[in-house]
Image 1 (cartoon, one colour):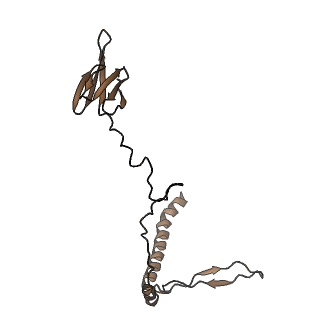
Image 2 (spheres, helix red, strand yellow):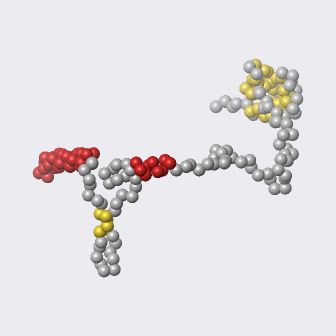
Image 3 (cartoon, helix red, strand yellow):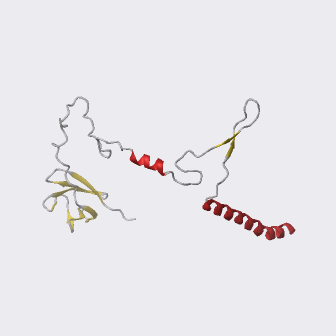
Length: 185
């Protein structure tokens, strides 16, 4: 217990002294008092002796932290290089092998866009005692009840109704779609 009491007694004192030393060092650096040059020992030479090298600052700053204005003015007077191309623009990709520049691919502009998706959603179905199924669909802000062979909005024909999906054909584009029926959880 005596060691924990001595740590509690001397710990704050040691921390206070360390903080005081750091404050003194900071004040010296801010006032510009010169710091001693850093020493770096070189690796041992063949004779076994170590020589001491003092590294000087090789930048635009002096040892006291002042900026050398003559070096800065010389750097500002240099002309900047001129660029002939836009560094942010990309050149067009090269044409595929066997094509001449300017020639278009056969399928680029001549192919029509794909037809829009069928805007219907299956909601469910019902089945009467004879086995005839009726599908309930929503689309275009309306709810539809349809049998196999019926047309919705004079465009979409019901081809089949199963417990899992309703098969619909777009009569204008000939596209067929399988509309899944949501299953109860």
